[in-house]
Image (tube, rainbow, N blue to C red; front, side, top):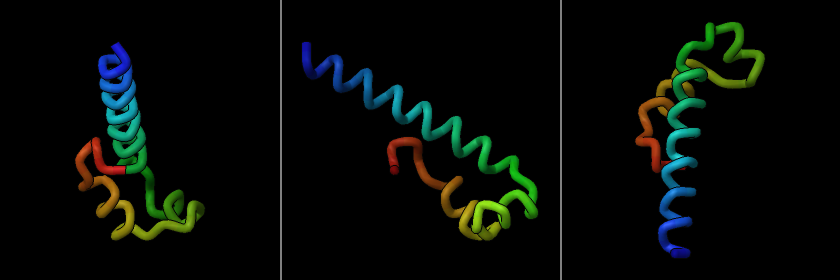
Length: 53
């Protein structure tokens, strides 16, 4: 049962990473700059698979 709970938690975390990366991809350049991020950094982060932290 513990394995099932951990698996579900992992999938939920991956879904959250995916959602956050989708939001990050929608930022405009001035918003990225406000966060201290460059467009290249955002592209690199958004290119990751959901299970990559």
